[in-house]
Image (cartoon, rainbow, N blue to C red; front, side, top):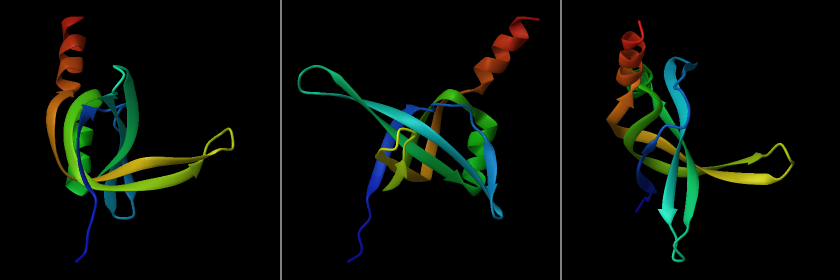
Length: 117
């Protein structure tokens, strides 16, 4: 029986959305920080790299900006890389299969800009 790790996240996009091409497909890569409470009353933050593909990528690029609140679901994996200081790092990565825009932020940014003129 095949298995896969699925994850659901609710969080804010960490940076502005940039639509890129990966071959013939559109892709948006971004990060969502998720803060959890610890037993001692403190907080820990885990950063998840998230990627949107195809029409999902286009929708996120058109309707979301930095700070947008999204509910995403997808497959969970990890990615290893070398940090600038030479240490080996591992980051959780989510390939998004479905999502819901809770607050896209783009509308509010355009409204605020219009109010200034």
